[in-house]
Image 1 (tube, rainbow, N blue to C red):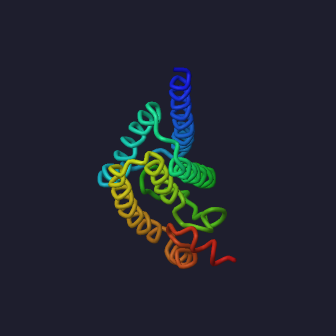
Image 2: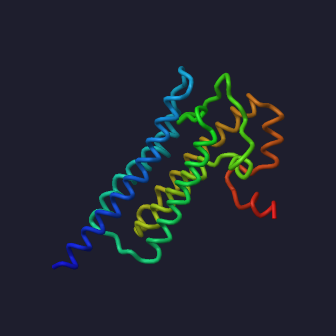
Image 3: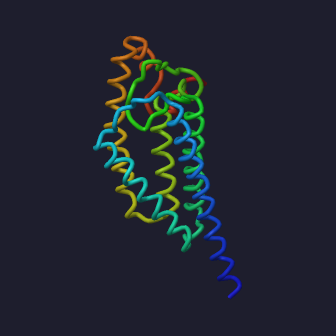
Length: 196
C-alpha cells in the first residue's frame, strides 16, 4: 500500500512540475505582451485552430495523464528532456525579442530585425521551440494517438512561418532577404554544424 501511495505522490509531483514549467512559459509570454505597443492586430483563425487550440488541449490532457501516472520509461525521460530543451529555447528567444513579442504575425513601427544570439542560429526560434516542446510532450506521453497533434502543429507553423516571412520581407526588404540566405528558418543544426 505504501508503494502505491508513493507512486501516486510522485505522479502528482511530476504533474505539478509540468504545470509550473508551462506556467512560467505562459506567464513570461503574457508579461511581454503587456510590454508591447498598443493596437496589435488580431490573429489568423487558421493559425489558432491548427497551432494554439490543439496544443492547449494537449497540455490539459498531459496534466491529467501525468497526475494519474505515466510509465517512467527511457522514452518518458527523453521526452521530458526534449520538452525542457524546447522551453529553454523559447525562454532565450523571448528574452531576446522582448517587447516585440506577439502571439500574432505583425510588424510594429519600432520593429528591429534581431540577427544576434539565438537569432543568429535560426530565424524563428519561437516556432522551433513550440514544435520541439510539443514533440517532447507527445513523446513522454507515450501514446501514439497524440502524434496527429504534431502534424497539425507543424502544418499551422508552416502557414504562420510563410505569413511572417512575407511580412518581414515587406518591412525589411533586402536586409531580411540577405539574413534569410545566411540563417535557416527552423533547422538550428544546419547553422551550428556550418560554424564548426
